[in-house]
Length: 196
Image: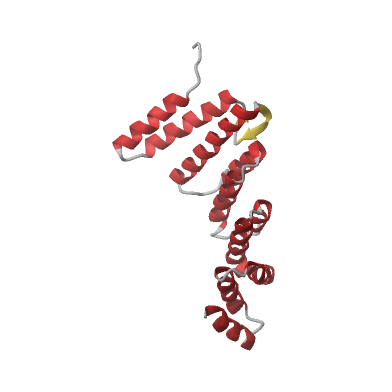
């Protein structure tokens, strides 16, 4: 129903982007991803005011298809001057984190949120998830010290140091006493053994 309504408006004012964007969303929700993606591309390439909304739409469609590089490429369209930029970078990190493409993707995920103004707690939680997965990858495939996950070379010891610090940082922001204790316990559990 929405598709036919927006299509009628789009037919009357074909040069306007607002009905085109609305039609793209209706097509996306209606399961017509290819049509929606084409409309989103047109919106993103025509007017800077529509880039963020169109980029998020393209990223959703591509992620749904399992096209992680395409979703990341779409999110990269959002300029750093846009107020949607932090959310685009967060979603970029999530896409890369969930891709299962190993340490290089995790390094890119961490770089995505580096220096971006996100909610501090949300940033720490995402950092912890990335570091946890990186430790698991190193456990399976061995260290790759030429790859850095944020400031940490991809070795078990340095990643554990980073994860411990992140858990302690999260514990410092936690208002619930039980959750704070649980985070401190996690930090202690992940802490590497030293002879100091």
